[in-house]
Length: 323
Image (cartoon, rainbow, N blue to C red; front, side):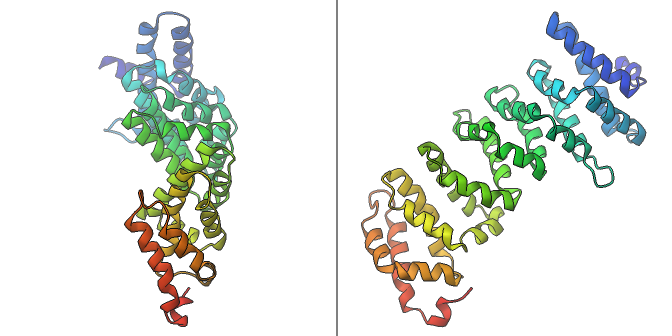
């Protein structure tokens, strides 16, 4: 452990410079030799940011290290080379990123601003799911980024966003699960972004995107952690109309996924007037339609929805208009 004592005396500037040089030399030649130097540098950066277990981090050194990392574009360099690092070094990169992302100076979040100005960082984090060796490390950093609306919006509006529909279907369970966790955070952490972006997904001309979006929407609405989003979504008449249109789609798979969202509107015991009005205007057509809808696949759930819609006309008017 002597190297820890020796390197702990390095200034933040020296730590960044030596690690940057080691990465360049690793890419030019002996990976094993320079990987050890990189690991030492990353470990000591982590000690500056978190302390060493015996003493707390020194605020001045933390500020200096953050500035040096930003000025030398080290966050880009680290994430672009993370796949080449040793196992523990990969974890240290994630901890360094996430510590910096949480740092606030007055009302500013310097690392959030830095990453927002460096699109390559978010692109590399998202595409990290394509490499099993770094997928979980990149996912940890990505979800910390997505806590900030500025960065979440950049991912939503990027080409990489569409890759999530592939990533969540990966056969490797830990990667697909982590990708789904990031995708869920991307869509639900910021409610304004959720409602504006999801309508675009559902109206996509791409069959796979539309089907996967419907399937994911059903899962999101039934997740108790998304209760506020679910309540707001099923209170909007336009959303109900969209699902009813999907029930008549030419694709049976689209119809099937739309039904699982549609039944959430029907099952809501406190339907707003706008939702009740739409269901009552279309009650006869819906009951007839649902009585013959995918009986081979949905069975009891379809019959239950049909009965619920039919029963609305039997309820007292005051109850039907509960908001």
